[in-house]
Image 1: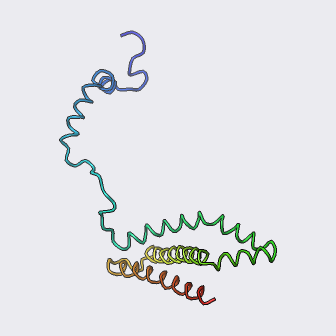
Image 2: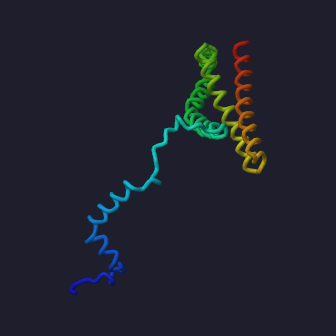
Image 3: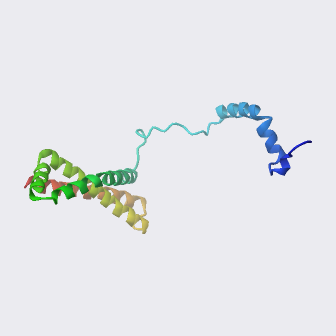
Length: 161
């Protein structure tokens, strides 16, 4: 053998042989085996899977957290604009008291309340409170009800002004 031997670079001979010489043969064999393997992953339609209420709450916790992070620059802008002078404050308060403004405020309050209540539930689960299946399901429903109650109270307060 001339030149560099496989053992000089730390590659075992059988590995080089499989990779180099029999590459096409192994591809053909693996394609044949893939058709016969019934344990391969299948397409999961997530809209047909019925998640438990805790799973839905967990997904909403992540979604509302992302929504609140994306909402943060707009909230800072509104705060900055409202602190500039009394005319800007009056303009922002009239926009927020319009129908569109009130609906936007209710959506923001729902996102914050939902994120807060499901976050409390996750913290309680982390310390071992409500680990059983029935209690975890009840706590998930309570988080939904509590966030809905907060939105309802906020809506009553907004429309009574």
